[in-house]
Image 1: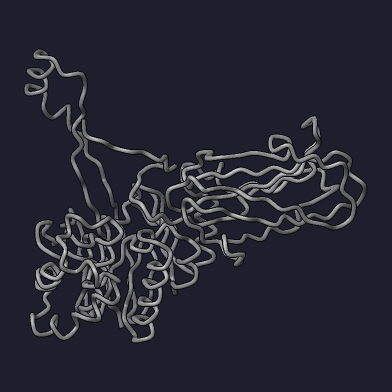
Image 2: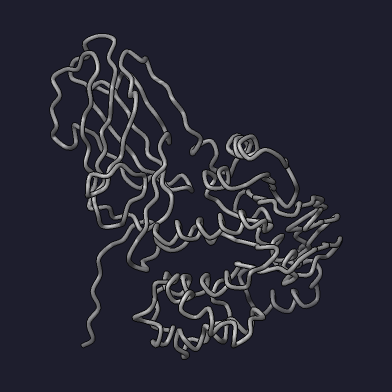
Amino acid sequence: MEAIRVSNISKKYFLRKEANRTLKSTFLGIVKRNRLIQDFWALKGLNFAVEKGETFGIIGANGAGKSTLLGIIAKTITPTEGSVEVNGRISSLLELGAGFHPDLTGRENIYLNGSILGLSKKYLKERFDAIVSFAELAEFIDMPVKHYSSGMYVRLGFSVAVQTDPDILLVDEVLAVGDESFRRKCLAKLTEFRQAGKTIAVVSHDLDTVRKICDRVMLIAEGKTIEIGDPTRVVEEYSRLGTQHADILAPKEWGTREVIVSNVRFFDKNGIETEQFVSGEKISAEIFYEASCRIDDPVFGFSIRDVEGRLCAGSNTINSDCKISHIEGNGSIALTIGPLALTRGKFLMSFSLHSRDHKTNYHRLDNKYAIWVSSRTNDEGIVSIPSRWSMK
């Protein structure tokens, strides 16, 4: 049985050209109004169905039309062409906390937001303790939400939204917000919904999670369907066609291979092996190598890029005054990075082994390893730079 049927959906927006505005250009813009407006098709001719009880992933580059599609299914956006048929009660995790009033407390906003989502006051009162517990906001629940951090805001919004017990759940990048502990709770809650036979449509840039939780995945680009099918195959196709930065971000392995980096293991500040780290803390890594012959004066290096392909950091044993006379056979070298100045998100790590004069690249693993960074602050950007404010 189909839970969602999308038939020939298209969505057109109007984009206005803007130039340097002068009195003359403004007047000509009024006279030639139609010439200054362009049609932009965010979606064009999408057709697919989601079966009842299926977890359906939607992936694609920024601007591909993913969020517009979920908005149309949720009926918060009207399509230009086509139709959507939904069989069951929908709950949308698209803009968490969109119904919150900043001057009201967390307690008051639970009832306000819950009523917007169609939950009765009696039901919310029965579920109140569970909502607060899930959000981990007991000590802040009577504080106005305008004083909440963005992470607290999202946690409360998610906690209220999942109480609706829907037949169909629409999720847009919820897994990319909040700290790592909250992300795990989100995933656990989605697993509960799956086990209960709920239908889930999820948009996410976290391809590893998409692969793990989805039954099928749809890849869209420039508003059109590229492929629908097995999660692993579609994610691999996305990596191949990928984003505009695919040539930078695709994992690459190359070199003479007289010595190779055979494995890399990451550890947090407590020595626990993980790929999840916190901004401001240190990353430890053990880099294993296998040398088929004696290599004199080798240099180990690393770099970190964000998901847009921007270089965030990079260094090597020369820059760190770590002299290695030679390596031979199998062994490992330890690396400590930090305190980590990255803010939050997914980052790709590369490792290299080359000669001191850089003329010989023994082994390079570009964008081979992914790490996740969460933050206790609301700093924006790629890096977190300490700052202080004072009134004079």
